[in-house]
Length: 112
Figure 1 (tube, rainbow, N blue to C red):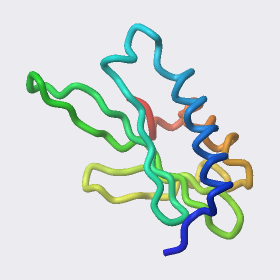
Figure 2: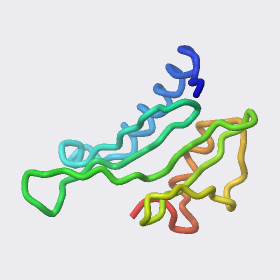
Figure 3: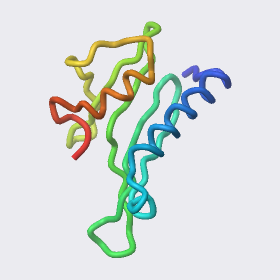
């Protein structure tokens, strides 16, 4: 599985870091984190948060971005750990615009 070249990965990291910095309120930054992982031509965004069990943390997948046919597609994950393409969000070339679509969340796919 081929991945992103170094320049593209660095550009994506910069966009993601800025998004994360703006997403979590300052007073919650020690408790909640948004993390991302690259795998091939995929970027997975997850929320790292305290578990209901004291002292433990859990990672909850939020969305997955797949770069296919020169466009970014967004996927959501169901309770059986299967990713599904979000048909309501049109694939586009601009990653940053797709990332911002998570906050619109008109259909309840992403943020709880």
